[in-house]
Amino acid sequence: MIRFEPLPTAEELEQFYAASYYNFDRSREQGKGMAFASRLRRMRAAGRRRAAGRLLDIGCATGFFIDGIRKHSDWQVYGVDFGESAVRFAREQLGLEVAHGELVDARYPEAFFDVIRINNVLEHVRDPLGMLRECRRIIRPDGRVLLSVPNGYNDSRELIAFHREEGRPARSHKGHIFFFPAPTLLGMFDASGFVPVQKKTYGFKRGLRNLGVLPRKKHWKRAYELPAGDESDAASREVVVADTPGRPAIYYRFALARDQITMIPGLHRSGLDFMLILEPAATAR
Image 1 (cartoon, rainbow, N blue to C red):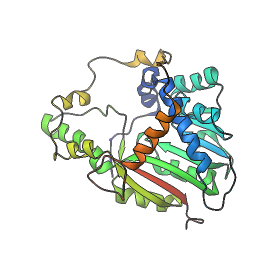
Image 2 (tube, helix red, strand yellow; image 1 turned 180 degrees about the vertical axis):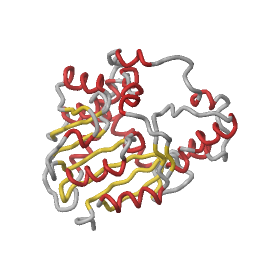
Image 3 (tube, rainbow, N blue to C red; image 1 turned 45 degrees about the vertical axis):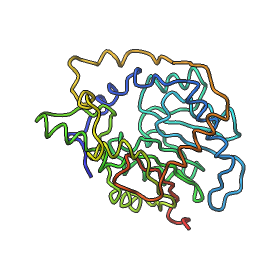
């Protein structure tokens, strides 16, 4: 496992996840949620035959994704996010039930959720194993965790290359502070009480660039340069929403299906990202 040392403080993370970090497109995110709602209606975790349940989106940002789910299904949706401005927007503008801070701070009841979605969040938190253990506590015995996480072996390659070639610290422009190779992830699942029932890899073009098999972009180092000035004033700004015209529902369903098709079974070093479905160990088949 690779990580930044020292780890950022809560105050430093709060500054990084300023309002500008959450300037997402409303129509696109709600469209993704609408397409995901169709998947939820078809989803049947082991032993469950109910049409609806409770879903938690960890790292829900401004909440547009779970708002799309709420509008197109009977599921109860919840969210949690570290960014204060994003949580305020989700609560006040969308009327969503979103908690601020780390997952453990939300204090959800035991065995409360049917589905927990963790979409590119595990690598951002200061205690990833603790977060997985909390997920185990709050997931139903027949529930599922849908986890997307970068392949840490691959995701760290450019940061390491920048440091070696430039001889100075690199900035994690994506906010990743942990980098988990596949064996580490599997060990974390075992330690937190989960069993992966599905494992897939995607993002091979970017992954092959990171490994040097394909040429990197000409100015790839720019993203890793330390900022020239103080960015602390960004924390006070409010979320600005880009609201482009929405597309037909079929577009978002097709995009979700396309993403699934491009994933290859197994955990492969040459891909940038992993997608896993986890079940509580006691009920895994």
